[in-house]
Image (cartoon, rainbow, N blue to C red; front, side, top):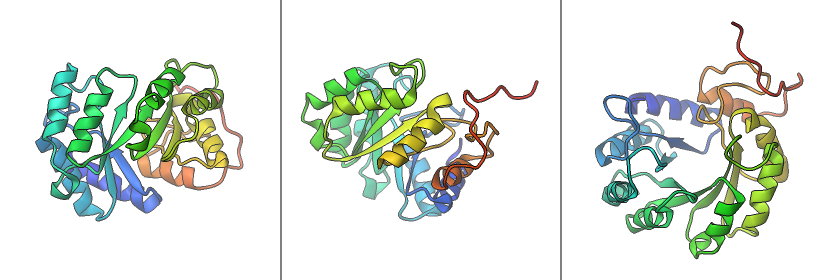
Length: 235
């Protein structure tokens, strides 16, 4: 929640094998924020704890109440060498995605294009942005991304994307997290995992922190069969 806590979590994730981190800076009340001072505080704390670790932040809808305010906040962020994030995710299905991405590029921040659906992939490839982003994040979310199976849904989005000139990260959320992650690893894609995606290991056990998820992702399949969907915790 706080910059200090984010720094500890980032350092632990890095020690577990993560090569970069994605965080959601928050204000004094714990609400997600795009305000420059809070973004810089979070990024600065992480870099102090783990020099050289790349830091990504979110620009998702819901953090502020309209696109105009979102773009205005992002446009105020300093460049990475002056305390701004290295990159930020922009969900391509959200209103004003191109404007947010351009504001990030203007201040020297990399863009991660978040693609949740085949329709969003088609919108993305119809622009010149596939050659301007740092990476593409194919995000598979049950109930949002079309399809009843995360791996099938990933294949549909990847087909709509076609050949990407930049690296592609594939990850799922909730019950799709581990099947998608293992499929993506076997298919040669980059992956990510964290508490934003799931609170459980593939076995169904609740995890302690982000680092435990990273360690599990960096190891081979567990010997015990995965339980899907993840069982409800004991009552």
